[in-house]
Each structure stands twice: as structure tokens, then as C-alpha cells.
Amino acid sequence: MWTPSPAKAAAYKKACLIGLLLTVLQLFILFFVVASRTLGADTMHSFNDLATLLGTTYLLGRTWETESLFLKKRRSWLRFGVWSLALGGLFVAGESLFDLLSGVTGHVRSWPLLVIAIAGALGNWRMHRILDSVAHEERDALDKNNLDHVLWDMVLSLAVLLSFLVGVPLVDRLIAIIVGLFILPYLAWKRWEEDSDEHTHHDSH
Image 1 (tube, rainbow, N blue to C red):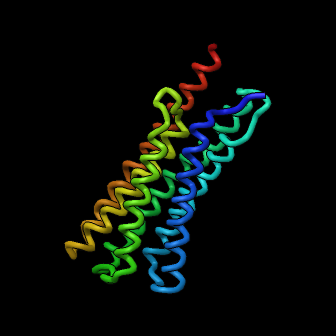
Image 2 (spheres, rainbow, N blue to C red):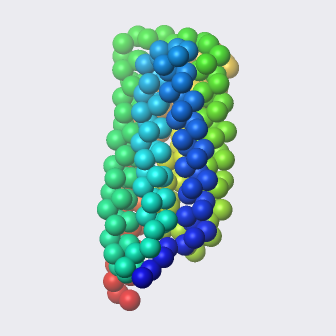
């Protein structure tokens, strides 16, 4: 029997709890405070991120018959993670492009959206700190992919906050287009290639 890193599993459990709280907060505001299309899209994106973290937590939290079996399942889950990262980015970019092409001038300046932006930035910052605390020598492509998810969610939340405070919605949309259309798909491809290299190295030993 083979068990993955207990320290890494503990870090993911803490991050999952924060991600779950953020998602619940978004759902509460979406359904009971303000019905925002943008917030709805952000909530779907948070669901994807939470799913990747929960899946990783499950993989790390159980005992496997062999290390090879764990690596096989981890690669399968990474496939979901990189597709989620790439498609989530394209979805965010597409939403911003749609707003620009449709002539939508801006979001409603309301305290619920400000609360979500602040909570998202702080929550994802804390999640990144927790996951980043895992020793560098233990970090694999799936860990890096999960870090990408929370780091760029934090950046997008900060973009929303900045746009809200300066009253210029174009700032948020331009950042979302750059991140979603170029950065996230590139990172998804990069993590998959890194995992392929890891598997080649592991098989050679």
C-alpha cells in the first residue's frame, strides 16, 4: 500500500474549506441579494476551481495499492484540471468580449459586488498561501495547476475591485480578456507538458 504526502493532503483540506465558503457566499448573494449575470459566471468559475481542489484532496487523502496507480489517477485528474483552467479562462474572456461588443457600459456599483471582490481576493490569496506552503520538492504539475487556479482567480478579483473603485469597467474587462484568452490556456498547456515530462522521468526509473 502507498500513501501520498500527509502534509500536502492537510494543506488541500484547508484550502477546500476556504473555497467552499467563498462559493457559498457567492451563491447567497447571487440568489438572495443581487441577480447578476457577471456574478453568476464567477460563481460557475468558482465551482470549477473548487471541484479541482476537492478531487486533488480526495486523491491525496486515501491510500493506494501502488504509487503507479496513484500517478495514473493523478494524471487523469490533471486532465480535468487543465481543461477546466483553459476553458474557464476562455469563458471569462468571452464574457468580457461580449460585453464590449454589445456596448455594455458597466456593472452596477453596489456593495454586494464589492464584498464578493474583496472576499474573492482575500480568500484566494489565503488559499494560495496554504497550497504554496507545501515543500517545493514535493510539488508536481497538478499542484502547480491548482496554484494557477487560485492565483489567477485572485488577480481577476483584484481587477474587479480596481475597476469598481476607479469607476472604469473597461479595466476589469481588458484584464479578464488578457488573462482568460492568453495566460490561462498557456498555463494549462504548460502544466500538461510538465506532467508528461514527470511521467517520462518516473518511467525511466
